[in-house]
Each structure stands twice: as C-alpha cells, then as structure tokens.
Amino acid sequence: MPETSGKRIYFGKMQEFGVSWNNILKELDHLFKDFTIKFELLINTLNGGSLQNIIHFSTGGLDDPHVEYGYKCPAVWLRFDDDDFKLYVESAINRNPSMHMTLKKTLREGEWMNIEISQFRDKENKYKFEFKVNDRIFWSVENGFPVDFNHVKIHAGNWFKPVDGRIRNMEVETVDSEFRKNNPDRYGHGRRH
Image (tube, rainbow, N blue to C red; front, side, top):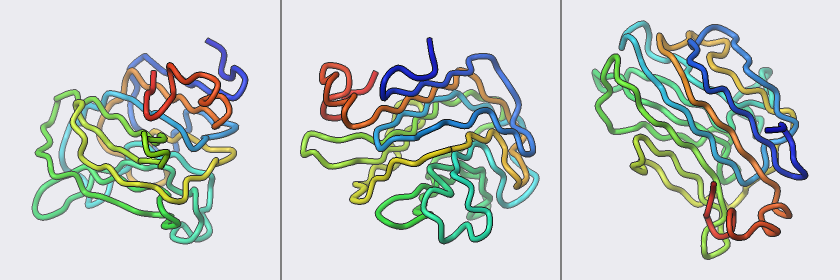
C-alpha cells in the first residue's frame, strides 16, 4: 500500500521490533486531526526507572517540551506510580501541549497488549481523543482544539530511557477532513477502518 493516497497517509510495520534509544521509525509529512495508531506491546521487565518511553509522535520541540503544541501528539510511557508500573499517555489536547492520563490497569511482564490511540469526529461533530488497551477504552476526552501537525517523527524509544519491550503489528493511518468527508462509509462520524 502506498504511503499517501490523496489526503490519506498510512504507515505500517508488522514485524516485531524492540524499543530502543532514539529509534525513529518514520517521519510522516502530516498527522491530520483524524488518526488511528494501533500496535501490540509486550513489556519484558517492569523495572528500570520511574519513566520509560514506549512510543512518541513528535514535531520536535526539544527546546521547551512543555510549551510547544505537537511535541507529544501522542506519547506513551511506562511510569512508576503508586508503587506500581502503569502506562502513562500524553497528547496535545485542548491547547494543553501535554494533557495526560495514567492508566489504572495492572500490567504483566511477557504479555502482549493491543494498544489503540485515536482521534476522530463523533456524531455531534466534535473531535474525541481515545486511548484503548485490549479494546477497552481507558481514556476518552473531547478535543476542542484539534490540529493538523506537519513533519511528525514516530519514535519507538526516544531520548529518554526506553522500556524493555517489543512492538509488533504497528499501523498508523491519518486522513484530512476532505478525505474523511468524501469517504463517509469508512470515516464518517467516528467510523474508522
């Protein structure tokens, strides 16, 4: 499948790969307001520091990561919190460049999890950001300030300590508003894929 088809961008990496320091998988020309990011994650060991990177979509913004909108669009981490390791998600939502949520779910070493991060227009024509693990929604928030980002790097491990884990079956799909409008059976009112 080609990377771009009109105003649709797709990236897939099906083979299993490790999360590692400064591991840039791809730079997307655009990450539009409508997107879906899916992958399977296996954490080998739950130790090794209070914050470990898993996946990070970013426009750059290394000079001041707490200010630039698009620095985390989104990012997923393993975080040590309340005497346990949890998934921690951040994204540019509602003019907050780093809105975040800590997942209230027990993690197990050596167990594959299905992760899905998406943003889409719902039936009320409002943008919704969602984070799912194993098809269960753990975070759903309206995004009143969705943005089309340009030159977005996909990191599977950034400049922070990487998680001791593996990723497989990664798919990223993003479409612009015009493409979504012209394909309502596939993308209308929150319908994706």
